[in-house]
Image 1 (tube, protein in one colour):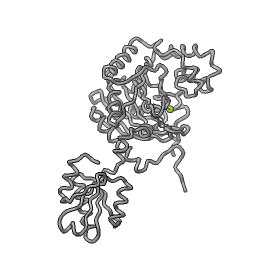
Image 2 (tube, rainbow, N blue to C red):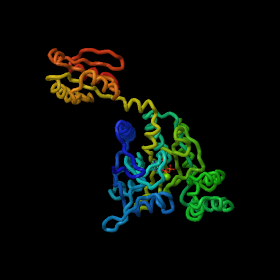
Image 3 (cartoon, protein in one colour):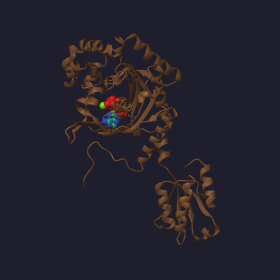
Image 4 (cartoon, rainbow, N blue to C red):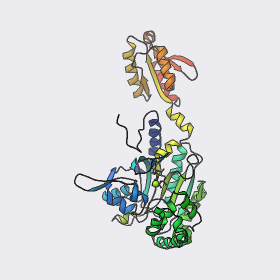
Length: 419
Ligand code: ATP
Ligand code: MG
């Protein structure tokens, strides 16, 4: 039998319910803060990612799915969302609409990575971008939206790690500082980092090899050379977070794996997945749109790893979502099957989600199935009930039952929080 490619996943029921619920929550919370959805292609010209994410980043250097199409054009399955959003923003002249604009996306990304828990070759991200606002308020708003989303999912143990990457002018000075600091221990760094030290020293801080991590644990932070303006900016962001009661901590080692970030960068780690598994990363990218040939429009945003997020969802949220929040309709022979189909349609029109028993199971078999699937309620009707214009509504958790009219069914359902 043909199997799925390595590093991809099938998202099947009942887990797919979690994904639907997470995404519905993202749509709701992001839109409540004024964000609009944007959908961009899953593949783009390779050049887009080389120019935005950066030639010497791991993503571009070794993780991209790049291929030539039938006309020999170099295309790449998108490894992240921001570059495509920035391109689409410019290409569709969204800059002609009033700024700032809050844009969000949900969709698959592709990176050729070593497979492990929480690391896949096709994975999904939920991202938000605020384009056209330079103020620290926009950075803080991103993090507020993020935490409102996490709170809506029931998380209460998350912390945001923040660092200042300075302005682009500060970058070469910091590169020199890192280089001189690490020159003496150059031989102990991994081969990649020895190359990084020449090409793009900042990337050494992003290395996941334990010996490299240990070596860079004591290197000076960007603060040492960051411009006063960038320092004031990030200090304002963190003071806003403090005032809002959002737990944050300074992480001088945080550089993020993409070159377009300036000033504020942040990550959210989950205690369940451990310090090294990040569920969300973000930051400010004031030069990205100009680098792509557009006007100088600043931006800030984040991307959540949806696969990792779903893995660590609070149990209460998961339990609520996976419980069968539908009414199981059980007809018992004769004319009742047709009545059941009609009833299913009527109930759905009144906002009651249903599942009709269509296999003609006996009451005993149907109740067994209801138990297995976790239904909280069933409605049972035989010819006798039909004749009297009622159905038997059974609450399987409470173990109680009442006779109600079909009209009352919808009223009862809609009056009570489900399940
Ligand atoms: P990591 O340091 O774990 O490699 P990253 O810095 O490469 O992450 P970003 O580019 O910041 O990741 O992407 C944002 C989020 O997308 C990450 O925080 C993570 O949750 C998720 N993510 C990134 N790569 C993968 C992957 N290969 N599989 C699953 N989720 C991923
Ligand atoms: Mg990575």
